[in-house]
Image (tube, rainbow, N blue to C red):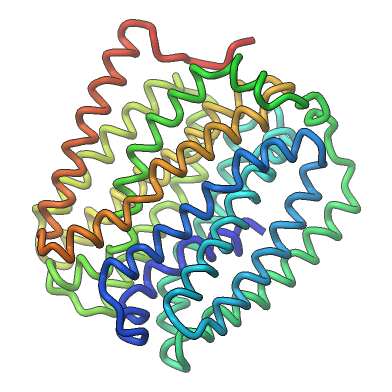
Length: 379
């Protein structure tokens, strides 16, 4: 399920240039298309957290699979950019609701090794991200862009049926039954929620702008062919496969706050390095590091939240964190597209974004040194 959900969230990145040509729109329009997926992903997260105080986790996962099937089918028949943007919002909404329900479910299924379990879940998602550029390239070699979404609709329908059968046959945990008050959970855990939003919100804003325009950036700035640029994007996501699995295990063993701060530092350094290197070998090398560091951050953040939140607050507080964080990062793609239409060079955009992250990181380090950055949830 998480494979098809993440495929829906990342498939637009390698499709931006083909869509811009096919639909005759500008960079801001396709950048907005990518941003709308993440806006859609942000919108249902807090409402889904409330829904989970009333409905079992696996019911919500089934509903998200059904919604994603319908949304990808709609995208496959979209006559223009506006209809495709509407489908993108629905695709993102299905993915956002899925993660709010599925991540707490995974952590509750494996309470003694939350990080490792979330790492496996994240690895499955990352395999979709790795395959997305190759999938798009293969589809475009045989047909037009709508075929991409027709295939996805079929895969999603099958995955939803398989998940439903598995849920019926499984003795699911009762931990989520204690989570019945979203507002109380947020009030009691607001420090941890705020820390998570600051850590991943700002970083995600930059990451959204970078990876959604990665093929375009490499083609225009690093003089790579479009097919090679899409392949390098697969390298970025490919590095995330071992990162997800290994980072989940490390998050179970290391001081989680220091580990996250180290990953944030590595992300800033790698984005800056990307703007200075040239040549295919150097670009691929930096892309590998960028992909590894970025995707190591996601299971670490989920472990930071889900690994310490008590049963009575887990899904509600996680939904508040995740929904707020997604709104912060969702505008990254649109910001890059807007600045590109204003003729601002890619390298200047990425360096400016990295500079903003340096300020955020410095504030987090100072707060950690003063003991103001929470290490875990309130008991």
